[in-house]
Image 1 (cartoon, rainbow, N blue to C red):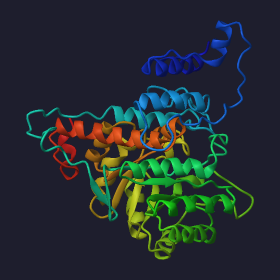
Image 2 (cartoon, helix red, strand yellow):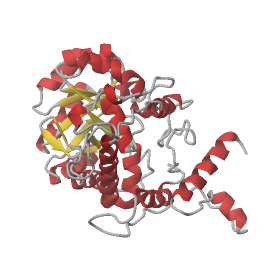
Image 3 (cartoon, helix red, strand yellow):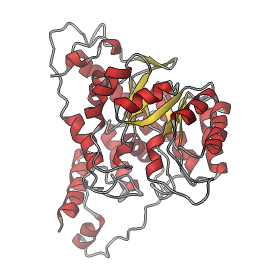
Image 4 (cartoon, rainbow, N blue to C red):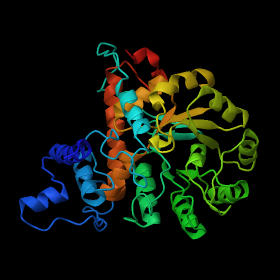
Length: 399
């Protein structure tokens, strides 16, 4: 067995153990029972057991269900570090060697807290206030869904497109925060319009993620975001390096400051430039009039061997903090991760792979449970790091 195969099997075993159950890879299970090996055909979509409302059980229970649905697209590893899924693209793995994905994970793990249990912050009568206001909207915690698309390519069509986004947006709204829709380079206009119909049903409580399409194509989709009253528009400019198309209708392209300025001026909706990893590009986004940036290396999926977002965030925050909104993504899983990124200089985090797991595992209730659990974890961490509210979080809490 190769090291990579061993890691994949170990990930399945360990993740199942978290939920009190041993999970074997399909081939190993078949050998153990003298049955024919399972095929690689994707399993049928999973129907949530609980229906509408609040999910029962824990996030680990939701992950156990997600594993049944998503394997082998995602193995739902206990530590989502990008090792078992190296190079799996389409899918959710990191590009090439996977080091950019892994750098996100390990960079965040290296951030350390000072433990301050005698600070006077309580978890009883006066609990820490985890809420924040971003772009005019009050959120229950500084975390929103990341705009992740590709349901047909990355997730092999396990869920209808509109249902996938309904689960994510609905669960986030239930938890008092914002959902998101993603974009796909080759998506047909009918599919795109369906996503904005979902945003409209939730009164615009979502990030509208748009690829850096040719300018007129992009501006036409901006009009859809306006009609749906989306909370904000996120343009993942780093996508331009990986996707190509012969037709100008499906191409993506790098954007200049002038092009970004045209987009910003074309809409009343705040525009966020996603894919920023240097202070220089952050300043250019500000020059273009963007309302904010998202510090992101696209989950390690557009360029191999980039630093993790936790490593580059402080220098970027030093240049633009307070002048524009700073989002960040990269392996956000626990409330402690939210606290780390905010302490490093972010105003809000975006959650990608883990919220996808929750959506596939138990639909809207699963997403709501995941976000509410992360809020509770953030509150507990704020108690013992001397943070009575989000405004008080800063680098002083880091060791």
